[in-house]
Image 1: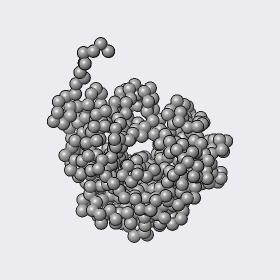
Image 2: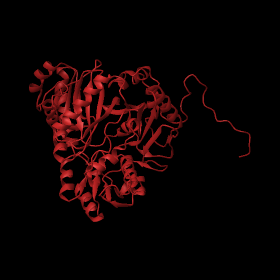
Image 3: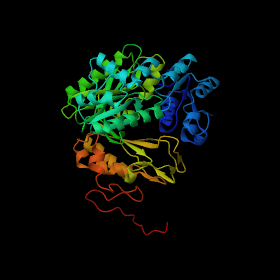
Image 4: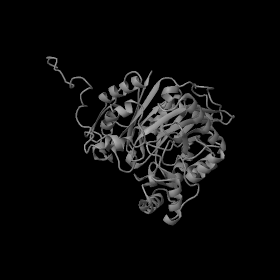
Length: 481
């Protein structure tokens, strides 16, 4: 898409971190004036530096800044922003904010507020999937309030059972019960966490599919009747019910299974009158049987995986759709294999506990087929106030084997000091026989990698020796430099 092909002239990015950087870069390529917002803590952040202008919207807590919808709308008006891109997280799936943007006469770069509202309620989204002819994960389509009400339902579905927040996400408001004795505590715990994180204690029951695969479909829909399935991403490698590694395509799906998954995802999009980019998530049994899990009405963290195998810029497509343009493509083939590694400030040797602090050294890998989306520079402070995602390392190869080899090489080049990171966990996963064989499931990290009390090093010092090779050495050339 060439510069100045959009009627909008400016874009406010209502987010921070790597996604703000990523959106600002595409907007700049399209010739848009870019407007950043920042909390006091992010005054010197990379997205602030890259934008054409930046506005302070409050103190470090997200409630005072990135979740302050009225402040962001006020800045959009004062800065003359023609459109707002919400990124992901924060207000990206807040139907009320989407309506506020529209009411202010500003273009919302995302789906209609009604679709956000409908699919953001997990119970109503399950009902929508059923109406579209897509089976959700076996469970309830109504909220449950007590053990007395839930116990007979759980017995009928079968244990283990997942108790999930109706408005949840990111592993919050989720408990798993292995039997009736654990179910009461699971309901109480999930309701309490759901109220704390989402302001709504409603929970429902869902079968906990052991050793299932978490596979999601990337879709995109314009306002001219064009809807496309852009392939799937396998997000089964997780810790604490949160994604760690994503890849495309999945090793599990057959061509027929892939086609069926895409058709189901598009049917759900039609059922909720969806436009713009979105992701429909499924749980898939080893035999390929899939069940609707949820829909994310925004750009996903792992959208870069799809971009690597399709050659598309999904942010550019989002902006064009919001501007009233049709999709810029018809059918797009998936070429090769891509893998995304989330580089988080977490300590894998301490059950992935967050590791806030100051990054004292930072060096990204490069080379053919390597992409790094990040917001980190030496001296960046990783705060406890926000998500601890430092960067996304995304690699592409002609084959899955080539992509894995490229990812291992890129990890060898990655240097982060000052905070613990998930780098050693990624090294462990990429070399594990279960992952290499393409059979990793949602319990893989807990069952295969965390049985050893010290499965990972702390990520400090040089990487481990190459497989089957000599330890790395630094050789003095003998010169006087």
